[in-house]
Amino acid sequence: FSADIHSLLPIKNNKIVAASNKSSLVVYSVVRPADDSENLKIVEFKRLSPHRESIRCLISVADCMFASASLDGAIVLWSSHSISYTRQFNFVKNYEGPNHTYPASAQHVFTVDQRYIFASIGHGFFLFDAMTGNCLAKVPNAHHGKIIHSVLLCDGYILATCSEDGSVKIWGSPNPLLVCDGSELKPFTLQVERFLGKSISEIQNLKTPMIPALLGECLAHTGAINMAVDLGEEGFASCGCDGLVVLWKDGVLEKKRRNEMVRNILLSMDNVS
Image: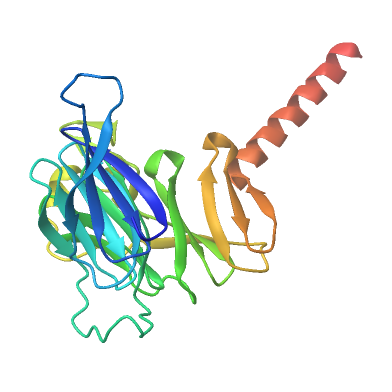
């Protein structure tokens, strides 16, 4: 490989996909020699060249498919069985060559429920259905700078986006978090249901992309924010180019905890008196 490899992805049939700062993916086969020795060989199997710019991301979507995203903004879906192109999202029609800067570059992608792809493209984020090719939700201008990283928090109910503009924004559905099933209410089971606030049947029947609501903004960093990680009920952490790691707490939960602590202290004082 003549370029710096940044991602490796194992797929079916003893294959490995490699992504670098070039515009091509390279698929390798892991082969056992004819003499049945323990020394396995890795040989080039196929080159995939659908992108027109450096490949930024390489992820597994499900057991049967994977996706790659490029600085030209395109997200390509691949079959793990046939190692072939199946679908493309966010194709840039006015591509002018590698020497131009594209504001709508794909910076980060991740998948949920083995079907749905969250993509940070330019200053916004998008949610795609890998099976149908539909865009289910989008906020094209979520930040003043490019979104570098995004992550689902609170079991999928909210999305945190980290940007070059130094902010973390929190997105989700203003709708109730439960779906009606006949005469009773039950929690959503899929993360995409929780984030959009709709049942899977409603999601599959969407005619136009939803626009998630801005639920909050977290400001503490003085530079671009590189990523955030989910800490469960304890909140989340973010790290930035300013060298800081910031821990963020759920204000409602922390208030409840403080009130409970004060209540326990007062009860213990009454018992002593």
